[in-house]
Image (cartoon, rainbow, N blue to C red; front, side, top):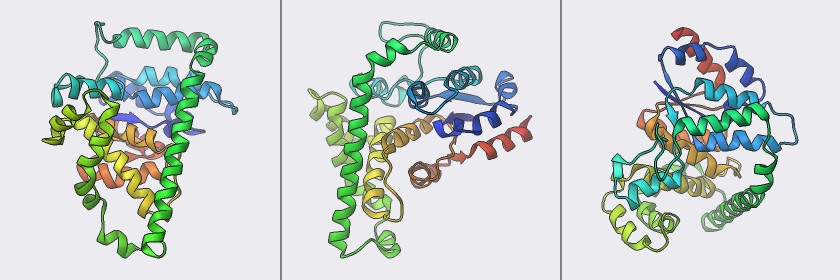
Length: 292
């Protein structure tokens, strides 16, 4: 069983629940595999700047201790492997065990994170990354604003908020079928703006041959669908991080999350039909106890 963590699995008392579980023992003997995603690691390190006290050093250390499967590459690296390098389904998706010209090795990366855990010193990195964090925040706010506009447009077109009948008439599968290629073409400029047309042509012929980029497009589409038709649910500023995190389920079986809003809705719609599983921290620990 291959496992990834959403950041919410470590929030509040959940971290103590995990620490008291048999997870470390089970990963130590290889009974299951834990993988870490860039989204999870970034959100853990970002906790450094939280106004509320967060045990980010202890949490990062524990995550590294239980990570016996590997650490995923960033989405841009996987897109480059899939599309620009033309490797498709054979694209590298994990950090290599030995360094090469393009990537750090997993041991090098882990050693750098262990040093951060040891010293707790992220001051300079925090200052240096302020512009990047500000940009990420502004993008998330723009995406939320766009989602709000889409929701209001749906109200205008329908003459009121969407009903269960509206949702039944236009399920996400139908939305995906009509919008996938158009949306993927729009997003391809993120991969390589100079070769976007050629890469789109390559991808559109068989989106399934480029699974990670396609999974990201599906997540982007679901965010739009959710904003437009799922009016009973609140808009989530963290939506992009959520569907990006879920895309790594391509190479995992189970995600641990205590998020009960957009993350869960996206999982239920896009990933559960593919046989993937979601557990809360509590239900996951109960599973671990049965395995121990």
